[in-house]
Length: 390
Image 1 (tube, rainbow, N blue to C red):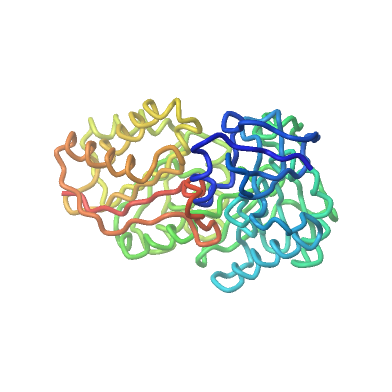
Image 2 (image 1 turned 90 degrees about the vertical axis):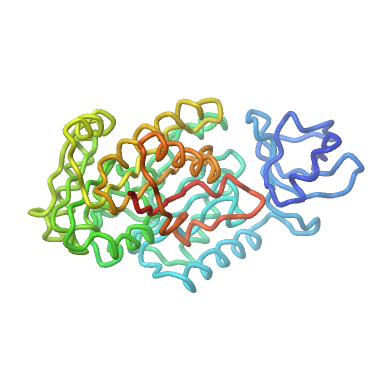
């Protein structure tokens, strides 16, 4: 195995639990290796820090798997990590549909596994974890006993790792369209063609949190996608819901989801650019009891955070103007680069510019099956505020 020696001053971030070593942090590499091999990591004083898999084609040179020098990266290692991850979910949530493995936060960098009923959707996003894919599939079958496993490796992150994008059945063939239940609300999930691994599971608890705020009220849900918040609002007793999204295909599925829950008569689906529509509605002086903003990530790069900040501020400013005095704004960001501090700063500025006073009712993050690993800030990406606007 090769030994990686870090530059002076680099060890602190890794000692504080961050599992990545960047290529520009390395002082020298002793020994030979091939892409995906396990390597040892040492600080500048040659003290052991951890070991993980290496990929010289990636800016993230090494992703750390263990900090135990004698822990072998073998079948026993992956079995223990997968069992630990699944046991954690079984203790805290209903695991009928959930995220089973959340990459670095579960100690298996580059691996995502979602469970939709009795089917698993898997992503192996890095070269190092791709080498263990067959073993991981074998262990998932033994530990979780799924009826089928589908590979959703149609993710451009793989290209940065020197991998091709690919999809397909890894275990048993099955109908990839299934119906899951979330907080008593039903959704169609297309494991083969839906977003990411088939559907988003990270807002589950936030969807449930709006129950106290929507009964008998008029709700506007922007960036509804397949209807997550809109359906929950309707099922929870909202008087009427307007749901906006720019994607016609997403809205078609949202309409099917509405029919599935017998609330199609409560929801008016509008295919439009939410930025334009919010501006028009503001000019028309429309008002709603509750406005929900759950946009896609406006940036996946630190370089574009200024533009993303302006985008978040614009929709939140307009959203606040559309809320009736004393009404509720539910607003979220799923971009890691929009840090909690930056998100809060943006909301303050938006409120000031909109001449509104906001009161925080709740601050929430992602669902419990997407745990946040302290020291690895990238694992905290979803932020959501429930605010009263006056």
